[in-house]
Amino acid sequence: MTNEELKQRRLAAAPRGVGVMCDFHAERAENARLWDVEGREYIDFAAGIAVLNTGHRHPRVIDAVRRQLDRFTHTAYQIVPYEGPIALAERLNALVPISGDTKTAFFTTGAEAVENAVKIARAHTGRSAVVAFGGAFHGRTLMGLALTGKVAPYKLGFGPFPTDVYHVPFPANLQDVSAQDTLDALNQLFKTDVDPQRVAAIIIEPVQGEGGFNPAPTELMRGLRKLCDLYGIVLIADEIQTGFARTGKTFAMEYHDVEPDLMTMAKSLAGGFPLSAVSGRAAIMDAPGPGGLGGTYAGHPLAVAAAHAVLDVIADEKLCERAQALGQRVSTRLEALKPTVPAIAEVRGLGSMIAIEFRDPASGQPDAAKVQAVLKSALEQGLLLLSCGMYGNVIRLLYPLTIEDELFGRALDILARAIEG
Image (cartoon, rainbow, N blue to C red; front, side, top):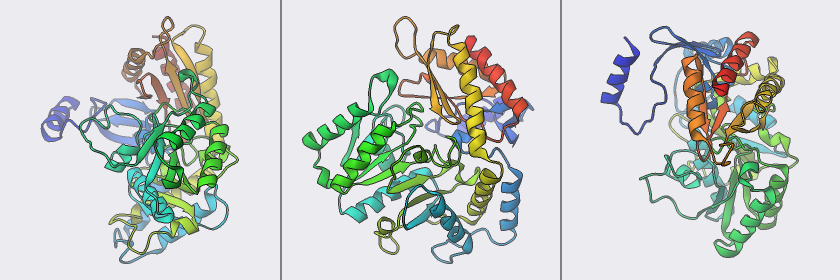
């Protein structure tokens, strides 16, 4: 079977709304490499959109899933519970940067985690309004889309969306938005659009993913915590893309000296298996009554087994430290390109959540065409990259943290050649 044959079958069988970036089709994968059906090798700096911090098919993850397969594959945790999710909740409760008693509930996708975090916040506060940020991405369900701060392609044609959702700008150096600007906009929102006493939650990505890998300043986090404490608002940290060592810490909120009330997580939690979670203060998590939370596949045995292995790998292989080291290598290499590639406007990020923003040197405008040229050149050389950003002018790097040093060096050479183009 060739890539072209599979492409034609895909176009005939699947709707165009499921956008597909690559024209090749995967046959197998290992750690940071994958091979298509025609045998061509690619270095994977997309990692299933930040799902594979521990790489494709980590041996410990695969072994854990195989052992669970020999026991049972599904009972529905809400019908017949089992130890795996209980033990995993205990581990996450100990890991999340939230003091006091904490509890965790499991779901299947990141969007489900976000939806349920909002439900929990509403149940706890008895309020309905939610505040999110421009450039945010919180999922493709209707509430997720309402919270998402980017119209194209996510929101086009899908409205109306749930009401009582508000947005304020997210800090970004190149867009001249400071943390104080964001806090001022939030206070203005409370004066002109929504009574803060009616706001159930503020939801924020500690580093925006789709929005362009912009890290939230500590000043903003402190200001949000102060406002939430003042008005009794639940602060939700969406760590779906930032979690599990990507930023050089288990969770990106560890970079700040304030705590969220709830956290959402998914993606790299289970090393390629579908699993998400909401963790938070026990009193808030217990607000919904029995039956108010759950899902048929929530806390699926195979995914939970994989997640236990992922947490072991992160600890035993010191992936937080490795994320810092790899991120430093990337940043140093990219900064060295700036004198000869003036289109590089900024290299930013935390740990190994690194992005390169491109702008036209003459006009200062976002340069999405440059990004597409870099992605195309890199792919032709065997390196898979992803774009992001409100204007499509940012490249995000999401390599597995377990990538071999030699392969990583080879990938950086390809990246540099593609940028220098």
